[in-house]
Image (spheres, rainbow, N blue to C red):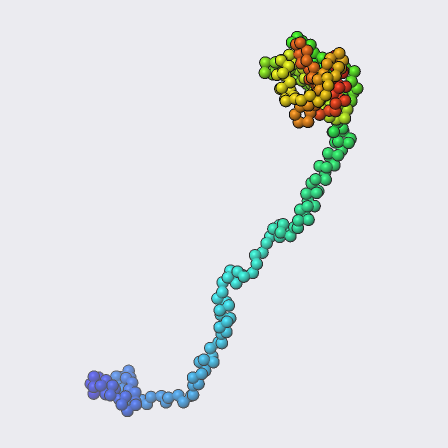
Length: 250
């Protein structure tokens, strides 16, 4: 039988349920198909074989690490936590620790080194300078106790007038100033004392007549005018101290 006819016969064979096979000698051998498997397969086996996965577990694992920690409070460093834990009382104690040494230093300076004492100067050079100018007769205090402290002195030209100023501290700690000038009395009084009003009768001290006036800022003044000079003693010192000082001028 030709090969083509054999192939056609083989193709028609499946109607009988048999299978044709071509051998090495080109012969077709018909065989029965293998019997179908009778093993019962449970359709649920595939489902049971699948590993059970908890849906909440997979959702939790899908949450990013950053998102999971978003609800928790931020962790502070040790120094930041220490600053936040401090109370107002802690700050008060810290300030006191700084102030105590300063207070002790001030106390020691005042009570052991005379920090509150008046720093006296020597005005003799200023008096000598004024005398050397020969513009008016210069007077200065003599015979006062060492409780009177000179603290400032100057000799200069002010508004075209020569003016000598020497400041003193009285024994009770109040201050006064001696002013001498060759200017017109009204101008000198206006510059030194300001507006004035008499506070009593004139007094004679050390051969001079002194008028008693009250000036601005609660200060009092004794004023003596001479042909070529005006002398003023003014300050917050008591009237008695002003008179004592004026009486010492020579």
